[in-house]
Image (cartoon, rainbow over all chains, first blue to last red; front, side):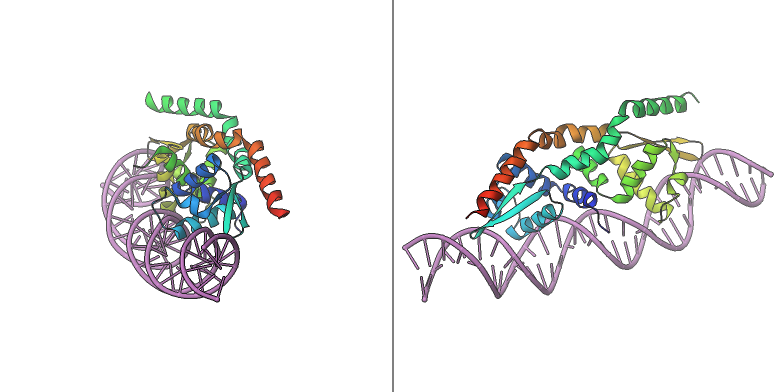
Length: 109
Length: 109
DNA sequence: TTGACATGCAACCAATTAGTTGCATATAAT
DNA sequence: ATTATATGCAACTAATTGGTTGCATGTCAA
């Protein structure tokens, strides 16, 4: 089973895909052709990246006539934050303190 | 050039590595051997994952005698949130509104 | 309807990744 | 000293990934 979380993390792992999200954040509703501009790769490569972004539900695409418009969906990113990053955040200070102590303890030995 | 951000996203992309972080969050300062327990892979595979986590600075390891103890460092996760996820969060509602409008517009055409 | 434009699909290729096994080294315990 | 434990290093393999090219399909415009 491939969870949503897995899809989102995989999708975010690639720089080109993060750039595509940045483009859509800058200007929503871009077509495939427009998204290709400024990328040093083929249209088909971009298509593949978009497929993964759609699988992760980070991008929603709608066909309008002969073009496909892409919209950013920030919800999965929020979910990741809420159910994964948040729990690492919560005890950040405590964890850092522990780390510091552990290093110190190791030092004077 | 490989940025810190790149390293962190790559490190977080793998389920086994996220599980290792979860283990350390549960109990900090685990040795390699302890981290291996509950993983259905060889010790060397775990070592490789830990190398990536250390490269991303998500884990700090210190040698104590013949064992290597691993500590969680939540700072890079916070950084990712601050400088990347945060900006997608900020305009979440607005972006969702735009998306909804775009879909609606497309509908009654 | 013919041509141009925007996208989709599939086969293929190279690089990277996740894992393995085998062996070496360093520390602890008897 | 010898043995057991904990980890490190390197070579190899299989699967996945990011990219390519070629061709097909669908839509708009003259």
